[in-house]
Length: 479
Image (cartoon, rainbow, N blue to C red; front, side, top):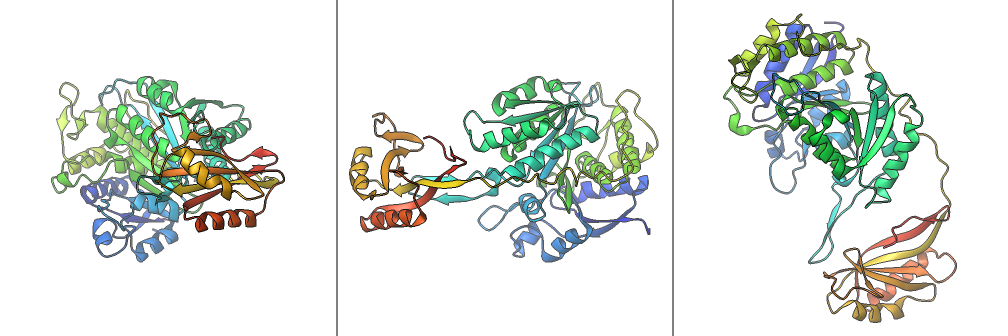
């Protein structure tokens, strides 16, 4: 197989080996041109001391083949174990998660027979960076990071995907009414990029109402692009309301590597019983074939799978009396798909894919931006303190502000409690004291001097955030 494409395969845990065997059996029968490098991944690898669920040889294989087909993996409970999915996305730069969610009515029961939505989720930033700190007895902080280049790259990918797949609309889901800076940056970037694709309709919704509308009227959507956490939640909702989350595949795309997986988990309670549905990993494999330029084989597999579903040959998870004709196990389902290779669905829409590998590389290069003029105009100092109320804290802190700064406000859990705070505000031991310049912009040594005075006074500062203006506009929230 001189023209075979190398891929890295991890069968995973639980039902992973069974569904991987079934998917590979179908791919081989369909003529997929693959050179498979198999690597161990999952629980046994975690137990050998590899906290990311994959050993050095596995990472080396992925970086060599640049294509990773992964079965479901169990992440052990407890400290020191990190999700292989999260680790791979960040370590391999897999910035785009792509999840097609399509109804197969009437063969798979759903209330939404016309649903055909693709969720494109930013994969590396947001709260999923996992940066957390316990700062006081009462409070733990989780840091949300959103960057302009990261936002631009995922938004451009969404529009390029829509253009390449003849999609008509891209919708951004954000929460910019609350997170005006982070989600606001994502939305502004979306609007700027959308202007470059006039043939594609662009709109946006607040994520909560967007999720509600998706659950109720998914046919209103085409392509959805959103941030990491929202995308994780919304894509599972979308997959479930198609009729079964077990049918959905997922692609994780980067500049250099790509990972393909099923949405469902390892289901260890079903392992070894031969009843698992291999469709999720098979649909991920179809996405993989398109990615590596074997769209002809991808279409052959996908159409045979559609015909199998149409013919009522179903595994237990989608079996329905009156609609299903035959209840089968994992391997029998795979055999049924193989029997239908070369056939097309009769009522469900058939599929076709380009036989060349899609490439958005040029379009995804971030646009250059001139650096802003940055001025340091204050500092937020967070304190671990439990010796009184807001007025008591202000009395201790105000004299320590120094000549260049003044205490502007004190807040607790983002609620302003001094000056003019609400007497009924519930307070913890986590306080933010905001110091602003008295006149001209300050320098870093002014903040260092302030912290020294606070330390001498016995005040436990746990975090500082510099307050800066960028091109004359405040780069920090008002409260």
